[in-house]
Image (cartoon, rainbow, N blue to C red; front, side, top):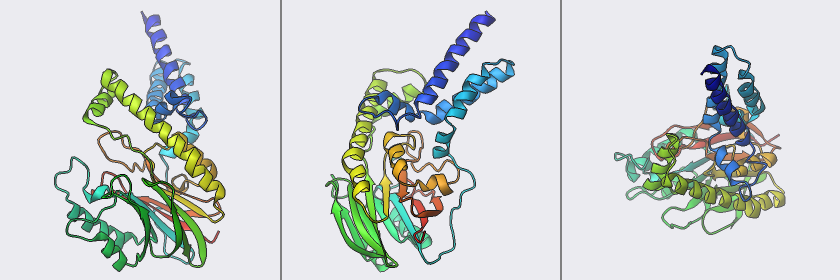
Length: 353
């Protein structure tokens, strides 16, 4: 009986370790061909925790099999740094040559969908107080809207953000907008829904900012039932529907990378910032490919898990700011706030390097 139990545990361990390693390969195997690998990237954290548990179980039994999960954890250790960092810098004293960038999916300032106390007006007031505290130079806002009784746009202009550029998106009430205290020399819509770039000038230095809002998963109550079933290892028809939706959205993200973001990186001659709501995990195809060309400030100065989404399904870092490697990250901060179902991300960059 003990031998049978050990064999079953070994098989489960091998499956979990193989899944953990595969979950890190989303950047190598495109969703258009290997969508199952892309879906596994969403499970990297729980798979890593499961393998840690396997190590503990085998060590408690004084068995050599602990080496299986230990090897898997060592092999995937670089990916762990995309989800969790220790000892980063959250803020620095202002100095010449610094550029502070914020990206924030405001969700219309309405808080989480299940927050019945937050209103657009109260959220807008909190947002303006946040801007007064953070004082970013450039703001990339998604799902932005003026509140019923508070003209946020006018309030930002009064705070020095006199220049703005953006697109209205599928819903004109929730556009993607860039506000800047520095000069905007021009811009271009990359599509009429969610992506654009603007050319700016700060302290005599020209640079380009691309604001991104990739397709979300638009999870319905039925999808959430599927997620609950998957969490409890009881897949049903709702689970299959959920996986199909995730697969389709992941493929659209790959298309956005190939058709829009990669060409933009290749054609841009000035330093480049790409910021926004990517609706994808740090181990995803698009984020791993962006990291091959640009710096991910979280890996330089991040701290903790830094989950930027606090909606009803697992919290991950899905809002990002990437910048050209010729610049240096000074600070990274994810701000916990009830304004939206996302948290704002703020990065301070040294543009003199």
